[in-house]
Image (cartoon, rainbow, N blue to C red; front, side, top):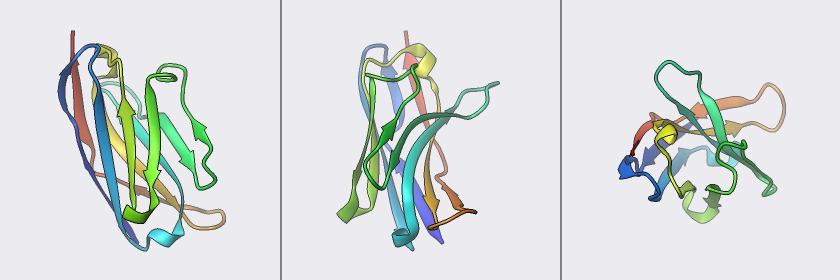
Length: 119
């Protein structure tokens, strides 16, 4: 099992930056990918950034060039750096980690942290 604890959410103004952190504990050796998702009220949860164990990153067009996912392996922490924030970025952000070496993988989620961007 792996546990994920997020931090760093808050209230910011449009154009400002924010960094989210996600610290993993437990059997972290099984993790082969990390990601961040978000969910706004009335919307489905959506992927905003992903990072494979090999270092490949993926971003949707809505955040590409503004959000950056990174990982600090010795400290079992991954980050989401968000810049040029917009009111439409307001959502609950969840960190995610995928465990296991083959399908079916195991999904691990953080508890969520609120990000609110005022105009």
